[in-house]
Amino acid sequence: MKIFDCTLYYDEDLILEVRFNMLNKYVDKFVISESKYTHSGQEKKLNFNINNFPEFKRKIIYLVVDNEPNDLLYEKKNDSNFEKIEHRRLNSVKRIAHQRNKLIEGLTEANDEDFIFYSDNDEMPNFDNFNFEANRNKIVIFKQKLFYYKFNLFCDRLDWYGTRGCKKKKLLSIDWLRQMKSRKYSYFRFDTVFSKTKYRSVKIIENGGWHFTRLQTPEDIHSKELNGEHHDEYRLAKKNVARIADLIKRKSIDHDHQAKTTENKFSKEFKLKTLPMNQMPIFLQQNTQKYSKWFDFDK
Image 1 (cartoon, rainbow, N blue to C red):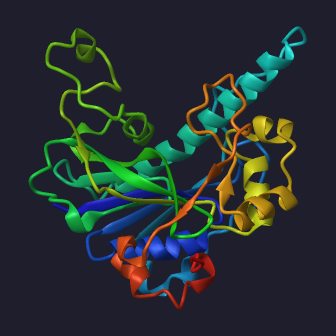
Image 2 (cartoon, one colour):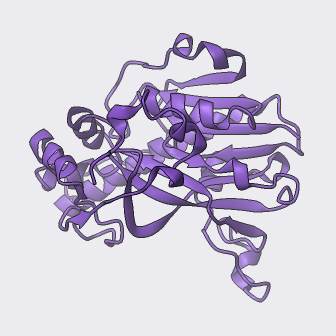
C-alpha cells in the first residue's frame, strides 16, 4: 500500500518545506497543484520551484491548472449587491474545487488499494499516531488543532477537521473527499444511501495533527485574503496590513469561524494561547532555531 499526499499550492514555501519534512517517512508521493488564477479570478504567476526542495524531488508530482472552471457564474444587470457578492464567493469555491480536482491527474501511479490523502497545505496530519493498515477500509478525517501566525499560537475556539483520506478505489474526486462531512452517520439514516457527503464508514482521527494558518508576514496575509474565497467580506471589513500587524502583535484574531454565511466573519476578536513546545510536532521541536521567527517565545 502506497501513500499519496495531495495538496494545493499558492506561494507557501515555508509550510511546504515543513510538510515535506514532517510526512516524508510515510509518504510515497507528494502531489501538488498550482493554478494560474487566484481564487478571486485574477491571473497570477506560477511560484512553485521544485529546485527549492532538492531532497524531495523524486517524490514530487507537480501539476498546473491553466484554465478556469467552465461553470462560473456571471453577474446580471438586475443582480442585487448581495447576489453579486454571493456569485463571486461561489465562483471562488468553484475555482478551489477545480484546482483540487486537478490532483487526480497525479494519481496515475496509484492502485485501487493505495491510500490517498488530501489536506490544504497548512493542515499537517499526525501520521505518527495513525494506523494505516487498521484504517484502510475507512474514510478518515483528522481532527486537528488550529494555530495562527506562529507555529505555537493556538486558537481554542474550535476543533479543525482538516486532512481527509481513503483508498483510491473509493475516491470519487479530491473535492468530494474534502467536502466529506466530519461525522459518522448511523446505519439507520436513510439519507446516507444517496448522499455523496454523508457516509457510515467515516472515522474521526483524534489527535490528528495541526492546522498552521496565516504563517506569513502581514503584507502576504493581506494579499492572500484579497484573493481568497472570502475576498469580498475581507474588503468590506476594511482590513489592511497595519490592522493585521496589530492583531499579530496582540496575539489575537478577528475571524469568527462560527459565524453564519450571511454574517460578518470579521466582527469579533479572540485571543490566542501560546502552547508549550512539547505539544508541537517532533520535527518542529527539533528545529526551533531554524524556524525561530515563526514561534512565539513570550510568556
